[in-house]
Structure formats: C-alpha cells, structure tokens
Image 1: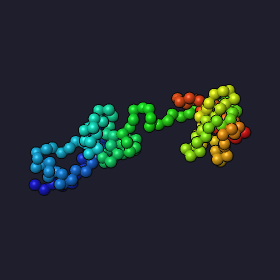
Image 2: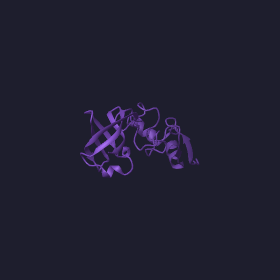
Image 3: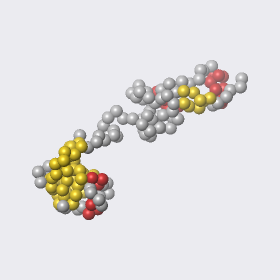
Image 4: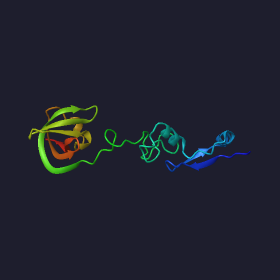
Length: 157
C-alpha cells in the first residue's frame, strides 16, 4: 500500500499536525486508525493536563506554543498569571525611598502617611531611577494593586 504525508486536524487544540507516510505505514501495519490529536495533545493527555485545560497546552506542533503563545502550560491563577492593570488614584504623596534593588529595578517608598509603597523602575519619571538612593525624597501618585499600595509617577523631589 502506498502511503502519503498528510496534515490532520487536532481535536484538542484545533491546529493541524503532520502525519508522515512512515507513520501512516506503521499505523496501518499495527491496525491503528490515524491519531486524532497532535503530539503535544497526546503528551498532555498522558500527563493529565488536557482535563485541566480546554485546549492543548503544548500547541499543535507539540513544542510548547500553547493557547497564549507561551512556552509553558497556562496557569489558572497565582504566580505566572498576567498582572492586572494598576489604577492610580490621582492623589499625590511625598515620602522617602526606604529600600532599593537597582539590579532588579524596584524599591519601596516610606510615605509621610506611614505606609509603605512598592514602585517599579518603569514608574520613575525620566532617567530618575538611576538617581534614586535610599533616603532620597520623592513625590508619587498613590495606586492600588492586589498585592497592596503602589507608587506611580515617581519623581525625585
């Protein structure tokens, strides 16, 4: 029997996958029907992941391009989830830089109201992050996040 390469649809992720002539010959010899899932979906089923996710977490090519284009299976919530948008309140505060991690690009501000505010280097106006030191006075906009108070639009005072 002469077998040909085919592109088959994956019932788990909706993508297509290659089913080679060599694989078709092997399946025919063993009496198996052609696969209904791509290699990634078959691997996910063996690992018990398909029951947790609505689509193949490994993607149609089996190499880890899941539903969101990530290289890992999607997480339901918690660590690794996309961060929600932080909304500013428009209220300006003053404080001093309490701690700074220049290598990782974040720090904490001790506000004059006694609260501690997290800030990211992207929130510092201009090239101001490199100018900040512990104890530097700053002005910032108060913002709220699920993890607690944040500082936006940080400016050296």
